[in-house]
Length: 116
Image (cartoon, rainbow, N blue to C red):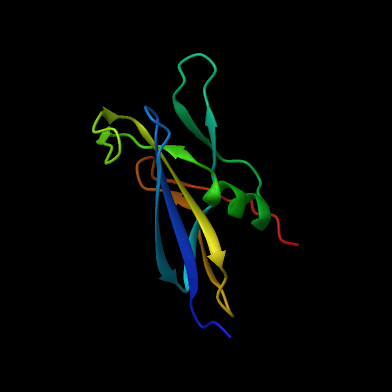
């Protein structure tokens, strides 16, 4: 039995596609109930206040995202934009989930939550 779970962090270089992985233990997850969408016009990531299920929140948590700041790749030594993805490798026996209802930059409360 696992009291804590294992979370895998995958960092992928956009230049050479080399992926580096790190694992860490966790007992709880902080999930945003806002969904990220990429704007068709500008390519910017936009947060929307739409109704979500717990499954959608977990899918959003584990979706790959582009990092804001370019980093130097250990494999190709180039400075490039990278993507990061978090994957639950081994879930804990009991998982504590915190739902983030606020966006710190917008100071806006999200109220739509679907419970199943």
